Length: 366
Image (cartoon, rainbow, N blue to C red):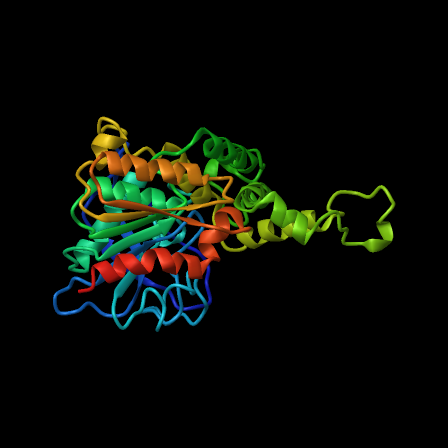
């Protein structure tokens, strides 16, 4: 696998490159590893104020503005990272890295080298390689939502004493059949697009298939109540209110198509399939004797966060993860976001997230 850089007109993140081989869980070996990352704040003298933020499926290293890249755009977690916010750069050294297998600067699939199977365990190990490169001996906190939470669970299992606190949000220790089913249909949409070409396309590629895949995902990210509130049966052409009209007549259809087109403009279909397969394969207990054995040695204080309206990763899964940790003797608490935004609440409800994450930081003030 070589680096695939998504086209951009803004400053690029820093890229760490390990020139030695990097072994994957599948047995495949990468000739080298590249990890693109941004940071906010500075390491203190004791080097004990580092925080690792892990992004979701189509995220990148640009979690907030004001970081090391100089990128002025608002980031996907702008409401949490910044002066006076929960992850304050004056107090913490926050790192966010593009995950292995993605398309924003880290090692990922290319037309010449389609990606081998990558797992959340591989992603966690790549993050640890970056932290070692940065000279970080421990983490004050690791946190992330969705795929980011899955990688977090693997990080805790692989390095049980490295983080002093952890906040997995809307992502359990094991992928569910429901989430696997949704991902499978989304991947099928990409693979059946004539532009897919087994992942060896150049240029535009399977744009229609990737758009449909994103539209499927968007339905699972939100709630029926929110769709009804925003769109109901409203049509984009009011003159056709009583007529039989072609596809894309309803506002909700146009909304989904818009989000599909947005993703096509910024993401690579090969990376989408690679990362969604990693979510399906995610199982922290694989090869470790089960989830309990995998997590029983975790030394971090953990705050499991669920979302009451999440249909993709139901709050029940996070409550069960909390109960599992308690049975293992791990210091764990559970918190639940109340929101009409469904799974996407972890990208919206910053005030509620701050109430769960803030105490973890106060308990571990350097």
